[in-house]
Amino acid sequence: MFENLSQRLAKTVQNLQGKGRISEDNIAETLREVRMALLEADVALPVIKSFIDAVKLKAQGAEVATSLTPGQVFVSILHRELVELMGGAREGFELRAQPPFVVVLAGLQGAGKTTTAGKLARWLIESRKKRVLLVSTDVRRPAAILQLQRLAEQVGASFHPADAAGDPVAIAQAALEAARLGVFDALIVDTAGRLHVDTELMDEVCAIDRAIGAHERLFVVDAMAGQDALNSAKAFSGALDLTGIVLTKADGDARGGAALSVRQVTGKPIVFVGVGEKLDALQPFDPERMAGRILGMGDVVALVEQVQGKVDAAEAERLARKVVGGGRFDFYDLKGQLEQLQGMGGLDALMDKLPAQLARGAMPAAVGDAQVRRQIAIINSMTHQERRKPDLIDGSRRRRIAAGSGTQVQDVNRLLKQFADMQRMMKSMKGGKLKRLLGSLKGGGLPPGFPRP
Image (cartoon, rainbow, N blue to C red; front, side, top):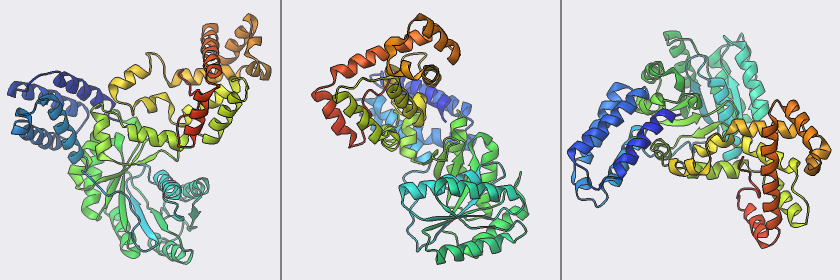
């Protein structure tokens, strides 16, 4: 998300920071670039106008004129206004009410409500240690009930059964009673959707909300729907007292216009962002950190959280102890490291969270997720002996491995060379360096020998 906008704004910011002073001409030129970037990102026109006016008003004030580093101050103004545009500071999703805490998900068909219900349950279970009950009131689409039941099993949540011939309001009331009797911390209610906004849909969602007294009423909207997403969000906001927005499929929208517009159009904050198909691909929305990523400042906090959450510390410690004890780093070890890298979303996802200049220096051109997958395919084409003893791999074996993995012999040679370099590095770290690194693993650090493909 925001890929195109981030590239445009990062370039504009870089040009501005190099200027010793800022004049009205500088400001006008920069704001023209910002306006074009926002237009290309499919941000709503009224939102663009109010944003540009706010930045211009502050940029022409004494704050910039009297600063020793006017370029940096202008960037900080852009950052502050982006944060305000996306909702400002919010306390987040907190379960402070008397249990069970009731969450109703509303939205159009195809926006991803059912999947979001499963993702939200997983987030509450893993990050908040809550007992969660899921229920579907979508009686018009029995497959939705079955889908949610399976998602509940996958994420470790409980599921309240629903009769496809039943009344949605009665199903929600029964689920609430079951949540109370079962002493659940949270009840997530997945509601029916339509292909478009209509009175029947609104009446049903509002009736469910009145019957169970939801604490959070979240509107689930597809980020890729663009301006249509804003129109549907506005319609739902007018009928239902929404408390927040969940933006789904944000990883597939390089423009990000919906995320920048929905707060001002609906007056409701974005609470969560769906950034992938996997059940762990739901993130609390932080306007400040997102603004930093848009301006090319990266999101190092999110990067650290991602690494700490995904790195298998036990496996990393096993590898470190193996090397310290004199064992040889082999292709089984390398494959494990590469698969951990994939589990964190791949190189592209990690680099996206680094500041732009640092990311460019950290990953050479033509290195990315495709190459990681290629390397895993090459290792999979090796025999057990070849993975344990890479010295066995001669010319004929290289040709066989290349053919088996659908790659070129040059790709196999390149991997073997990089592997030999990593072996030498591991050997040189047998002493105090690796022992200190082993100690850092207990604090959630990167695993030893974390590969750079």
